[in-house]
Amino acid sequence: MAEGSGRDAAAAVVVDEETRGVLQRIASSAKAQVRQVLRARIVLAAADGAGNAGIARRLAVSVNTVRKWRGRFAERGLEALKDAARSGRPRRYDDLVRVAVVAAATGIPIGPAATWTHAAIADQVADTAFAPISSSQVGRILADLDLKPHKVRGWLTRHGTASIVAALDVSTG
Image (tube, rainbow, N blue to C red):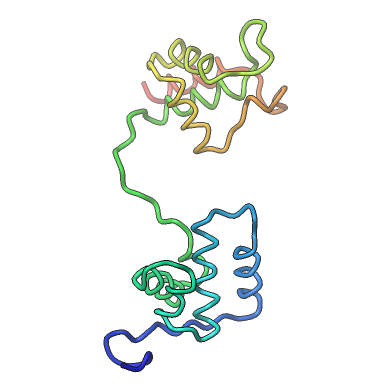
């Protein structure tokens, strides 16, 4: 069956020069995620007119993978190549605990420590928000917010955590 007809008709991929440049940077990047590089290579090959089976053979993936990313790009462009949000389990900790973690992480460490550790933040949150939280959960919250308190010697915009937590207690109570 011809590629442009019937059930296996491939989605047409048209890429302008700017988008092609972005895709080529991703495809040749040493620091990009492997899945992003693969998706960019699939789209570039599709834009060059290659068929799904040929792209699948060349990149050692299934035809369904090529069809999926080619179709998503054809429908929504570059944004479609990003990972979709996953459903997963509902949050165990509410916004109050998350704010308490941020408040502790952006405040001055207690005691002789020069920087915060996840365990120290967990202890601080347990004292201020009355929510037992593990150090690994603190790490996940900070990673989600892209906060790295262990790399910071001081924050310019924070004066302490007590006022933030007190304000949260008033607003939620």
